[in-house]
Length: 339
Image 1 (spheres, rainbow, N blue to C red):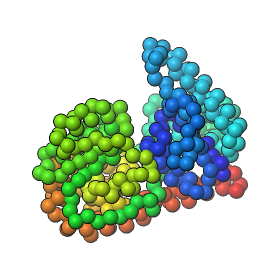
Image 2: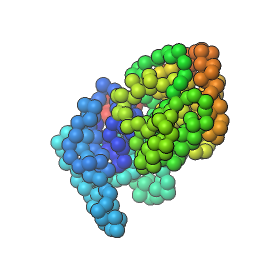
Image 3: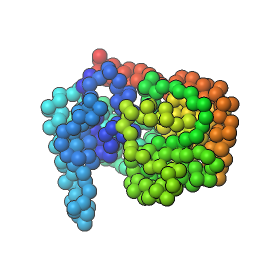
Image 4: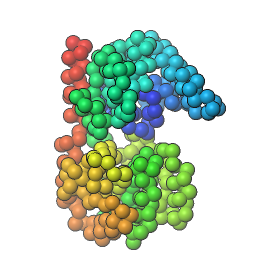
């Protein structure tokens, strides 16, 4: 099938709204993106056509209401134009704003909610959005009652398991913002005896974190973001994968699956999904001191972790292979489009 993915805030090549749909589609479908908050124009990224509507930032910061209204209309019109040019079977919308744009443009659309909903999910407008969609699915932790979950699984065949003789370097692959706690990672690495660490990603706090890392004498680096297809090669430079996040009941962190598939030992917060689903495969921490202790333990006992890391790879491939949601996604398409 031919599918347009419509999304408001995805960063092409880097964010989850790019990675998980493309891994979900695989080679079975043709796809292009229309992204509201991305530089205007036609782009080809990782072989995928991507049309940016335009950044909705300043210069009109003092006219927020008018700015948003303008970009809503522009998003809708761009989506309608690309639908006519690309002639897809439907538009897959990753958030309500994208869904409203498709609905108001009169286009056939489906919803795959990529992020948690706020008060929006209780409105009559939202109910109409869901009612008129061809199908609706949600991703883990989206908190949408009575909606089928298709998990954020990756194509783990892209990741190569690699052994290292020692554990000297840790990675935090993340969106760089306060919720993901990059400061905690920096402090934990600096408290450890020998381990060095890198933060890799995009985010609103990137400049601040770059300055903090600059004060660590190269012990912790803030490296440029890496695109979806380059992540597997990146991970093979590390032995320890860290997952930091502020406390929530349970938080799904896609990075963990890549860590485990690549042979890294995962160190995470206790409420990260892996610590709850397979606690025997990870080590947990809540403070910077505890993170440092875990890094030191792995550095000093690395060879003893081989069996656990192999079990972790087998476990993640069994439970988080993209084939799991891909099978159900294609079943839904068959049901809805009589393929």
